[in-house]
Image 1 (cartoon, helix red, strand yellow):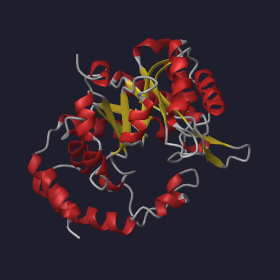
Image 2 (cartoon, helix red, strand yellow; image 1 turned 60 degrees about the vertical axis):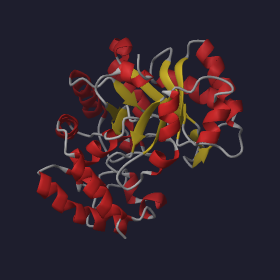
Image 3 (tube, helix red, strand yellow; image 1 turned 90 degrees about the horizontal axis):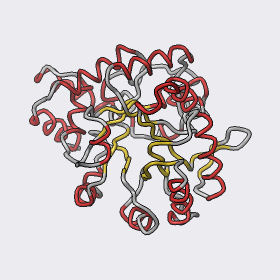
Image 4 (tube, rainbow, N blue to C red; image 1 turned 60 degrees about the horizontal axis):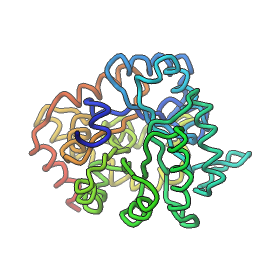
Length: 312
């Protein structure tokens, strides 16, 4: 049978919904109109993308609302992933809480915004040190019995959280950051993921444009692009990453490949990875990523890239 997401989609690409929510603020990557977003989502579906990843914080509900509007008439033909836990106050100050009351309210709002009676995969976005994951899982398990959630998953998690969560209900999907610069999940979790036959989705596949060269030191970002102001972006070792990307260019030239092909090829090198999440903002970008999936690059290119990055 295979893992859940392998059964859902033979194409290993998930559409990252943060890319279509920028002017809604929250977590987004610059202005894109509703009409542009809906057209892009329709194009993605036509090109064979079945899985769409979103969350309330992506544009303060904008992403979920657009995905809901795009697929309202063909709801059964797509697989929508959303999340709970990252919320915000009336002044839009972001908060993190997996409190049962907050999670219950977030799920109901998500269903409303998606214009759907259910979410295919509902995930706890981040661990909350103040709330035992089993308490949150009780809420999700109940919602699953009610048909509001079809499958449960955990994002940005660890083995201890997974084991505790499974005391309450089955955790079918794990989502975490994975790219050439951040490979900790390979060391820490892949053995267990393979053993338990869970699906794994990688976010940060292109490291927000760094691995394609679209993000660089000289680039100026729109105010609605989180890279213009987010403290975590400015603290994410950018000088090191931009320096290493320049060093990686000789590999791109040597093997006649693109940065997207190298980044996607790296993640899909691991058998545990069922889906790579990529945020695309135009048909051109989407076509480039699909091409990257189709062009299988030599494993030697990936290993040489890892060696360059790990060489201090």
